[in-house]
Each structure stands twice: as structure tokens, then as C-alpha cells.
Length: 242
Image (cartoon, rainbow, N blue to C red; front, side, top):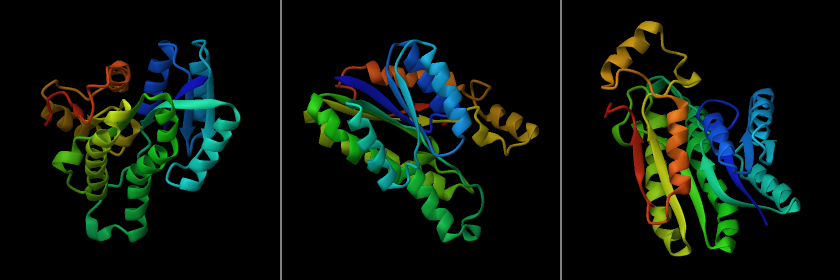
């Protein structure tokens, strides 16, 4: 049986770092991204350089029909998913009254509904194996909220509740479900900040800097390799910020 880990939002940032980390451990990967096909192809080539099997797909995880199409393609290749890393996510910065209804639904669909879609599609694979792992990438704003990031905070809070509930549901089947609540990580999501704003943010963080994508990836692999008794947890990695 060909067992693979599925990583969404894998073309760059945290998703790419997790992909490369898992590849160094000999884990076969399915990489998914809805944009940046060139960057996704580059990530796949880097992963393949570690001698593992890897396939990449342009898939919009906010569209359940595309998730089902992906599942069908993997089934045709006799690929079973034993771990899903739900990393795909987008942000919206602005006051709530200026946010359109379409923008609200887009944030919720990409950040939260996608996790339901991948879980619904690939949990049956894990049930067949009597083991599995789901890792959801969340944010400290899911618990603490972020001014001018209401939709993003709401979606991440939803991820936290989803994680805790699904962990209880799947624990008897030996499938762990955990989330990583990221603080300020040095990714393109923070490109909107000026140098002065970044310096001010780093002054608020006890460690004195933003986190690295590789540090999140290390934690993701720890959850992947941990025994099933660690489940239903929202693990914060924020340099002591919150």
C-alpha cells in the first residue's frame, strides 16, 4: 500500500517548510496549492531530491468538488493518505464594516471549511488503516483575537474547536488530531508590515524575533511522529508572545 501525507498550501511558507522537513524523514508526499503553480512545482522538485515519492496538484481546497476530484486521482494511483496537514490559509486585514460578505465567506471557506472537506474525504483512508494523523495549522488569534483581523481570528477559533471535537470522535480509531497555533511567523503573510511595524512587533515578543517556518515544521513532524495519546491539543508556538 502506498501511504502518503497530504499537505495543503504547500507551495511556500509554512507548507513548503513542512514538506521539506517530512521529505528528509523519508515520508512520501502529496502537495496541494490553488495558486503559484510554478512555486508548487519547484517545491515538488526539492522534495523529490530527497529520494521520496511526491505528486503535486493544483487544487482549491475551499471547493469540495475539487477535493473529491483529487481523492479520485489518488485512488486511481493506489495512494492512501495516512496524514493530512491542513496548512492552506489566507488573511484579511481591515475593519469589519469595510469587509464584504464575499470576503467573509472566502476567508471561512479557505481557512475553515477546507479542513472539513479534507477530513471528510480522507478520514476513510485512515479508518481503513486503523491509524492516522491530522495536523491543523491555526493561530494565536484563534484564542486571543486580532484587531482588524476578525474573520481570520474567527476561522482560526473554528479550527481550534474543530480540532478538539474531531480528536474525541476519532480517538477510538487511533487517529490523532492536533493543531499548531502559530504566533508571528516570518512568511509573506506579514509582507504588508513596514520595517518599523515589524520591529515594533518583534519588541512585543519575548524571544525578540518572528518565528521561522522551519520551527513550525519541526513541531509538525513531532506531532506526526508522536504516539496517539497526544490528541485534541492546540499547541502554541509564539516565542512567548501570548
